[in-house]
Length: 119
Length: 490
Image 1 (cartoon, chains in turn orange, yellow):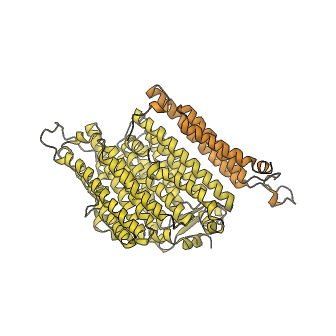
Image 2 (image 1 turned 180 degrees about the vertical axis):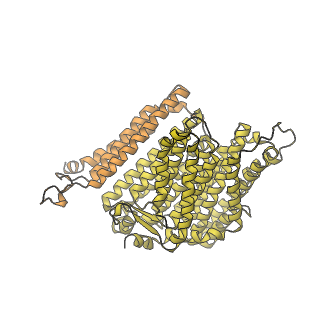
Image 3 (image 1 turned 120 degrees about the vertical axis):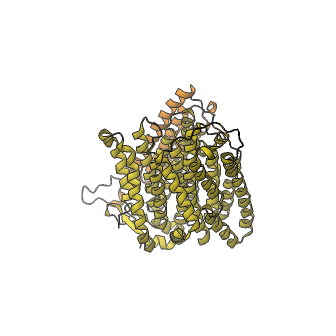
């Protein structure tokens, strides 16, 4: 149980990543694949945040004297996650637009049925 | 001396100025990309002598590394900046004659963002910054592949997007793992401390990085998107994707393998992977009837050859690799532009429809032929010194594995020759029953870039020594890892 409580966030993050990967690889419906990407990305964000997380840490702002830098949450991963979320939103928006276009052209969003281009 | 940060800022700023400039004049926006990349080209060429002496470092916001984001304009970075600016400029001249009248402004914005991303990737010294620029490059590429909005384009863009963003996700996990271990994002800082932890704990990020960047670099099992995306994109974008985007992906792999992790005992794997990529690419290219698909598969083959050259990990091998990289960038951009110009006349991508083009479009056909000869590696074109240097380096290496793989490379070159000569044969010697085609007046803006690329290929093929100094310095930068780290973190 000690292991579980210590690494809860890592376990959660990697479970989300694995679930997302599974959906991306297995599902045929393009919208479900996009949802899988969303879950995959969320897992990565949670993982990045966990890297810099400190239990009972404070915000990294020196508002009062006597605050210990060692007890502060690392702000860098949070900045990374903000950037990554913005990128992720852009990718998802583009993916959804392409899904609409796919439906307009093919009348289906089943990825197994869209295979005009092949080696 | 110009500040290297301008190579990123100028195209980025002008890209977002396009929606405003559109209100002044609709005509003016198509000249904006050419202007931006001409600026980059001129000032990058002027910066090269300075960089050869000592790399230029820029600390953004004045934070000294490892704290802030830094730009490293070393020989490798500047080589890529010059190539990107050169191809970017010439291809945007080609686009003076619009690809598609509708949404022309969006095309130019995305085109500039794509090349800004590529420039950022090769200049940055910060691993997360590299990821961000890489994403700018990829996102712009996904949307540009779908730009024509036809069935093929949309389908390829979806494939490209799914595989590309999966790769980007893996890179991000790798960055998280590295940050968790070292508490820094500066590449030189990580590189300096990478041997202080257990090797096992850096293998996982290494594998994630190689897989993630390998998608964009089109390494063998990860390149299923490439032939679709490169063949269904608009002509100009195919030229940029084949000439710039995959090379930038390869640059990221090289940076990670050589500088960041400093691995020397995995080179056998990369040698085999490179030759496998080469053989698969050339064999698939051989069986294509569609000219753009053939060129796309040929790009896969060339990337394999580059991976082989770089993983020889000797000065000669890497110099040869960089020469071949430059040759592939110019040659493939030329081939795609020339083929695209011929496609606009014939209206079909089938090789068989190019019958007798040698008569109706003599200049473009000649340029295509020169590009094809350069790709195969015939003297006096640029492909010859590149391939020759790689062969010499492989023979110099002298290990059994390298020599066996060298045999496969020669076989692959023969296959490459076979399919390129087949196209040349269709262009000039396809018999007498030619379709009746008028000689249309040539579009000046399309012929000029084709001419300039051809000229560069011939000049650099005859005088390879014009750029070998820069290439030697680049090879040294990749191999001299302690020197690179020391120049950033004293």
